[in-house]
Image 1 (cartoon, rainbow, N blue to C red):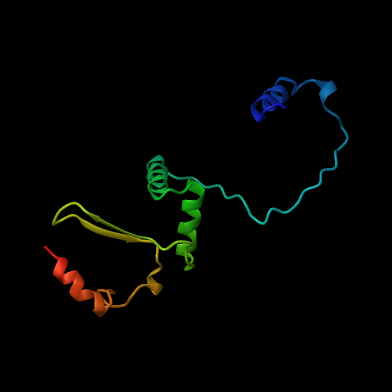
Image 2 (image 1 turned 90 degrees about the horizontal axis):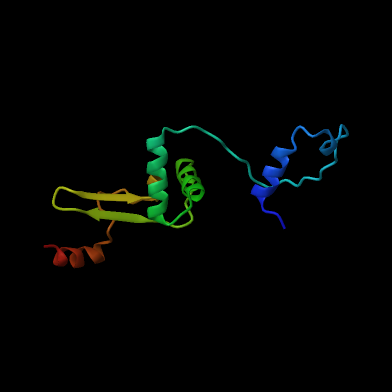
Length: 123
């Protein structure tokens, strides 16, 4: 069986060959896929950032973008994630895919029962 590249090359080579083509339309049965394809432009730098972020999260670029769209639309992502980074006293960050409306409203959403445990482990 030929792969897609071989078929594409053969079609390209015979694109002007009148014996390869017909004037009659061919009936083709199509089925709705339940999804759509979206195409848009991004600066190269943003594409590289997206690709790196998707790789870090273990997702394909498509799935990463789908999750971002779900979050922006206010839906839940499939897996809630909180990423905490610490690179020193002045380099502390928290990133999450949990929508704001579902996060705790207090400055700290740590349950009272866990606050003592956290305080005892602080440096």
